[in-house]
Every structure is written in C-alpha cells, then in structure tokens.
Length: 117
Image (cartoon, rainbow, N blue to C red; front, top):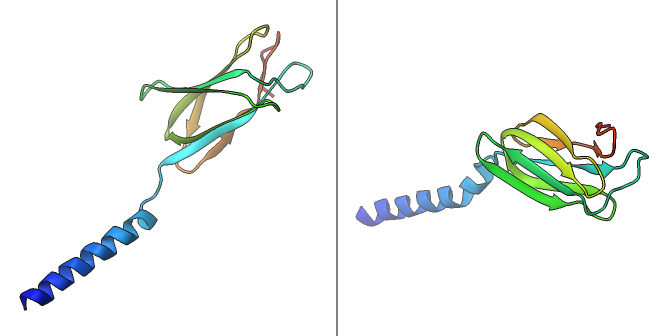
C-alpha cells in the first residue's frame, strides 16, 4: 500500500512538473517600431530607451540599419519611449500601456518637428 501511495505521489508530481510550463501564461509583451527623420528616411544607430517608471525598469537599444528597434519580453506596465540621436531633437512618447501578450508598434520621427507618425 505504501508503494502504491509513493507511485501515485511521484506520478502526480511528474505530471505537474511537465505540464505547468504549458499552463503558465506569460505576462509579457513587446514594443517595436522604426525611427525616421522628417523626410521619412531611416535613422540607424539611434538610441531608443523604454522606461517603466512605476516598476523602475529601463532598457535601451540602438536602431538597426533600417532604423528599426525591438524590446521583447517587457512586463505589463505603462512605458515611455524616448529616441535620441546626435544632430536631432529628442522624440518622446509617454503613457504607452502594455498589456499581457500585446505587441505595440511605436513609430518615431525625429527632427525639428519631433512628431510621431
């Protein structure tokens, strides 16, 4: 009888161990986009920073050769996206609410206008 209880406990533990990763929902999202100048040309090498001040998290990354950026695996929070590049005015977007499994695209235009498109 004790062997049967041990086998049942081991089976239950193994089942839980191997199925939990599939049942566990990921509470993350991502922010991506492209950075362009006032004429629509890509800005490679711009510094893009995402900040969630409510949780004290800040990450930055440069744009690629086509001006694109990606911040995967961000937690659910309210973010600010800031773009900086020497020779351009800083562009900033605030109050970006990222929800579970949401993938936001934030296109930024830098230059004298500093408007988003």
